[in-house]
Length: 282
Image 1 (cartoon, rainbow, N blue to C red):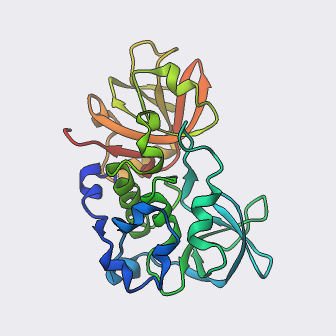
Image 2 (cartoon, rainbow, N blue to C red; image 1 turned 45 degrees about the vertical axis):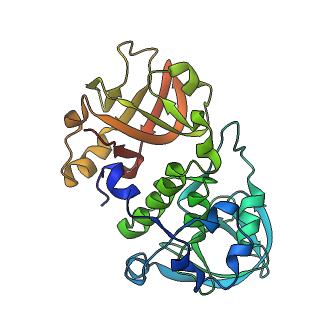
């Protein structure tokens, strides 16, 4: 079970000199964006060992389909698990060039909790290039070309991805170069403009209220217009198991990520603990 962790702790664990990775990636840095010449999501062998799933095979990349999907030469279509494409004015939905620069024509290995294809026939997996202990997902996140989706529940793997995103955010890479990449919870109109998109929002929780089977984290005083996070009753045991009382989030600043819905005001439903981070200063 993942805990809600202060973002500052995660951000300090990922930014490493490029020399830590140069020996393992076999000429890889000639292919990636300029940011990789400065920082990469470096992972120690101990960290990599902790982030382990069942092997799901290997293969050579034949084509890149979109920002997180590619085709292997054996015909398998693979979706990068644990991330969503970044979507802002400076980072549009299709970031195929960034993924292609990393994996086009290269061999990699797949691993995951389950090799069952999704409803579109894609195999979700963590993907590692040959001789690298850093997942491709982390490389995209460190370049600001993706967002952590919080769908990976393995704590070690989730920490690697979260820290890689934090490195890109700190360096203002890719999507993070756009001041609008993180939405302000006090600006519901800006959030609502991203309806149907995976979005990151920051703000102070003004109140925590329960209505029926749903708990609301309210970021404004007008409950029908302002931004709110919704948490269903079935999620309460997960928060309790992590030692978190939802009421304790009142008056605390958090970062929340998820799909924006319109239910009067903009809403994000929390389905996993990893969608919420406590911010520094709490």
